[in-house]
Image (cartoon, rainbow, N blue to C red; front, side):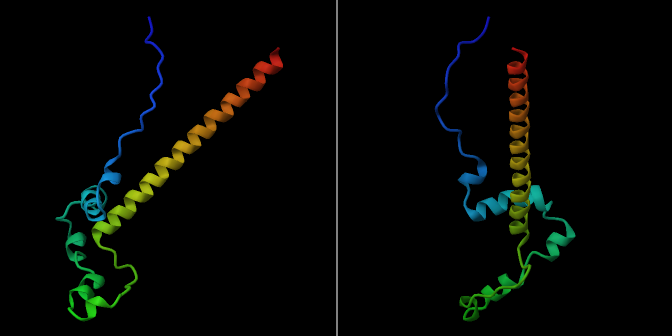
Length: 113
């Protein structure tokens, strides 16, 4: 006995990363990818040069680019993006491997006829 065949045309529901704002995404990814808030390096690096520059009333309006001054939350989002990119690349490799196997099986079936 098998289930009837049907086609699902609805899109997949949006993931967490698609629903959250940039600040919400940073806050959600920080515990997963940057570790707990109590870690010493996370505590010591909580404030960056960019944050300090923006806190000065008049100077904060002038853009300040400090190299490597990502907050821990921003680093966590960057780490998440790398993990997702590797996962998607792995999926593409798996699809390619499956397509190559299907092509080999097709050629073998044609040559056997």
